[in-house]
Every structure is written in C-alpha cells, then in structure tokens.
Length: 282
Image (cartoon, rainbow, N blue to C red; front, side):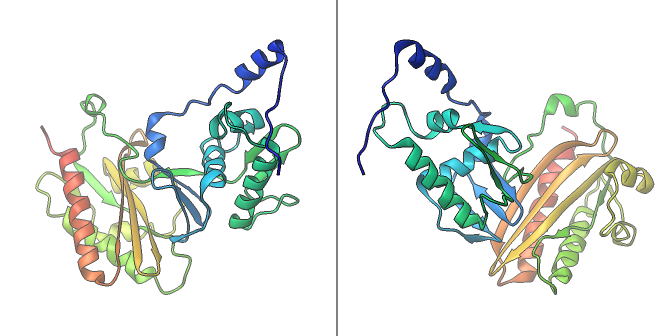
C-alpha cells in the first residue's frame, strides 16, 4: 500500500498542530494496571490479560487501547490518537493504520462496532471507551505523611475479600485468605483488630464503608479481592480511613498458587507488615 503524507496550508497546519498537542497524563499512570470487566492492561509491561491470561495484542493496537482507557468515558479524538501514537514525521496512511488498530483491539476484546460494549465510535470525531475502568497495582495510593498526622487509627476491621475468579468452588480460598490476614494483623500490639466472626457478617453486603466501620466501631477498614486464574493468584487490598472514606494505602500481590498455605501465610504476613509500618507511631 502506498504511504503518503498529508499536506496542509500554513493556517491549517497551525490549527492541526494545536489540536494534536499530546494529551498529558499524570506520571503515575505509566506504572498502573488498568482493569475493566475481565481484562486488565499492564501499562508498564505492555500486556493485556483476560482473566490473568495474556492476550496477543501488541504495538499500535495496544497503544490505542491504553490511550482510550486513560480517558475512559471521554471522547478521544482522531487528532489526539494521531499525536499520541503516530508522530507527525511518520510516513503512514493514518486512516488505514487507525482503522486496523481499532479493528484488532475490538477483535481481541470480543467487541463490536455495531453494538459496542467497550469502544464506541463517534463518526468523523474519534472514539470513547464506555466500560468502567479502575486503576490497580503496586503503590497506586501513596501514603501522605503530612495528611496522616491528623489521622488516628487504633482499631481495624478486615472485611471479607471479594472473589473475582468467576468460577465456583474458589470461595474457600478467599475466606481462608481473609481469616489468615485477620490472624496476622491481630498479633499487632498497637491495633485492635475486629474478630473474624464480626467481620464475616458483611460478606457480600453492599454498604458504604463508613457505615460498616461505624457499626463495628473501628477507625479503619481493609477491603480487597482475590483473583485466581490457572496457577496464578492475585490479591489486591486497600486500607481506608473510615471517617473520611479516604484511601491511605493500596497494594497488589501476585503469586503462584501451587502451595496454597504458604501463599496465604506469606501474603498475609507481608500485608500485615506493610499495614503495621503504615500505622505504627513514628
């Protein structure tokens, strides 16, 4: 196929240059995992996974998806995509390349242009990612020592972890992970940790964390999820200040699942250590 450059008048070129100014994203996004539905995009590794299984999506299609995910719910114009992924000095058939990138991305996601679940086309304007997207992964929420000076945490509840595996029979592992985490945190000499019996009554309950914390009479809450896929397990947890519903800390742990008991113990021990460091007086 013939490659060509698009020639513009000086006035049009200036307008186009302004429109194609690169979209600036906060630096931490470069390190994040962007999750939607059963998919997650590891931005740093450049990998798209479906239920933990890596998908064959690379190059420009992967870059297009990352750009759309970062602006989920908003229109991303063709000009913005061009500036972000196809530099101005690149000799390409942009329309053809963008069409192929979108088509390949939709194919990988199992999406449809006629009845979109993920990527919506706005004719002659651009695209919009319409599925909710969340940012997860290591150190997504950074502890602010200055803000924490006014946060007093002496009691804590570990809510039942959610099972995101999407398969029956995995609930026992999630419950065991919750119980192991409670056991390790309960060893703290500076924290009052709510018992498993009291915490487990909130399994599957969809209520605000401040309300739950008020009922349990605790200063902070730990919530999270467990995702098992094949031989891999990912545990994601976050620490939330109950009165303000403010996230103080979050972390994701991914391990091999061959030795379940060691996995539960090691992850719980590491989480307990991290939370202990976070909450212990200076």
